[in-house]
Amino acid sequence: MSVHLHWFLPTGGDGRTLVDRHAYTDGGIKRDRITPVSGVRAPDIEYLAQIAKAAEQLGFEAVLTPTGTWCEDAWLTTVALTQVTERLKFLVAFRPGVISPVLAAQMAATYQRISRGRLLLNVVTGGDSTEQRRFGDALDHDRRYARTDEFLQIVRGVWGGKPFDFQGEHYQVEGGLTALPPDPLPEIFFGGSSAAAGPVAARNVDVYLTWGEPPEQVKQKIDWIRGLAEQQGRTVRFGIRLHTISRDSSKEAWATANRLLDDLDPETVAAAQQALGKSESVGQQRMLALHGGSRDKLEISPNLWAGVGLVRGGAGTALVGSHAEVADRIEEYHALGVEHFVLSGYPHLEEAYWFGEGVRPELAARGLLDELSSPPAGVPAANGRPASAPGGAPLLVAGGR
Image 1 (cartoon, helix red, strand yellow):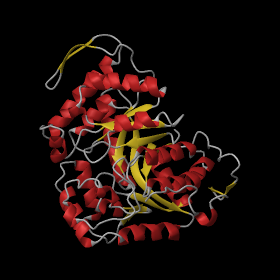
Image 2 (cartoon, one colour):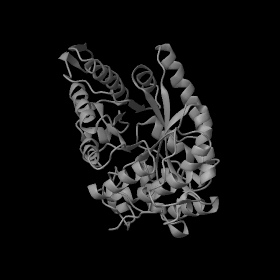
Image 3 (cartoon, rainbow, N blue to C red):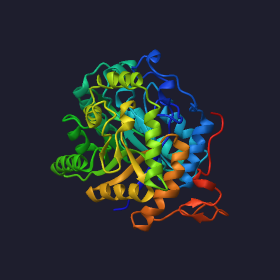
């Protein structure tokens, strides 16, 4: 089982601090309670194309694009980026409750033909009723997962190439059909830590995603989902969503983490924690429990730092350390059964290079990757970083801050 490496497209904005994403939406937090930020990079298509091209060059298999009212639409943004990349896949996040399952199946089929088979799907059921109501969805938490279950059954049924009927509580479909099914069928990624989410994953998905919890907690989740899938006669693969801060030395990496932490004033953290504490997502509550809103003891497991979760919803932990140490942690998760690693960092362009030029060669040397991409033509590799990047600087940085 090889490691599959994926990166992230910050379609809600990017920048040099952990609070930059709030410049484009309050996420439930009042803007007047947030410290103004500088160095914000708008999520325009030119900047996102830089990240996508960098991810492709560095050997990442795919990039995850989020979904929500705080970011650009994932379908439209990524299909545009298929035109400026060649091999990179796009892990498109979408919400089942705001789109017809037959239409979603048709969109996926069209996307596969446009992109020549580079679509992956990330199904986001939604753990925040406030956000769901912005989309016109009034269902409660458990009923949203029940609807997702029906949604995925219909999508797979419609992909069968024959008229498909379905009668459920949330959907009634007569003769659902995608005239030309996608080829290949997109892999379906899905996450959810609640009791309502587990059976949905076991019955329907290809890859179950968890946020970056300590290894023992991740193992418990894997055992849980694997057991449920076996009861369904299915096999589910596993992935993890993490941030990364990887440098030539552990000291440099932790200095970067501490700098990100120093940028956060108490008022910003308190406002974020108040808003995130209202989430119905069990996964979000598990993220909050890792740090309890405190800046103390944020290294909750070796090289696993919970500082991101002080202000960011969703994935709230980062792998921090030297390239070898970050590779150690990835190898540890891989030994538990984690195959897909969906990674990110602030800013996303520079951190893609730190990881791709530092950690990826480490993983390749350990035999965890299928193959190691060659460095760009005419740029000799030195210590995991092109010689054209003196002083340990990233190869490429964004202009227009």
